[in-house]
Length: 223
Image (tube, rainbow, N blue to C red; front, side, top):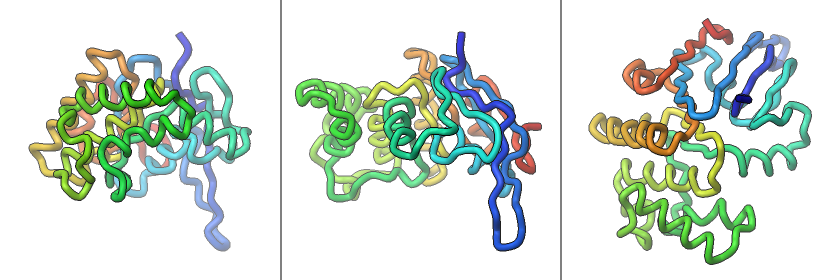
């Protein structure tokens, strides 16, 4: 069974004025279909850079990144953006919802970008919002929602195109402790009931505990 995402001897180097910074050093990582993996490390460990590489938001200085069986390290940004949009559903700490769009419109947005049919778009978006418990809030705007509700809209949006990989960057970093458990329980449910492949980036041990496998990052390396 081929991995959904695979990093092969990946390095990422940045030039900071006259100093060369090795943010990621020789990382090998494979996430198989249906896995729930937490990538954990403190601030400055390299996990944010690793997130960008796993999410195809950046390309390695050396090494290869494979997404759903396809090498993506040498693709042009336009090609990378197209594949990223289809293959990865992103969940961010700050929700990244459009404040001038209502709940339904926010979830429809990725579907419009990727040319889904009008009827299919509406059916998908409504079904997902019902799944996350917000089927009754379709016309509400982000400012009218709690932090937990906003994150659930973001989860519905991440699932909208049916991507093989869900990548969550500190998904509970902007909500209270009760909502934190609610969001993680929902992600666990997606994994267990639908077989979703999920990678969570976190610095919190209690969040990492929800995953089946924890990958620890320190000084740009997996330890």
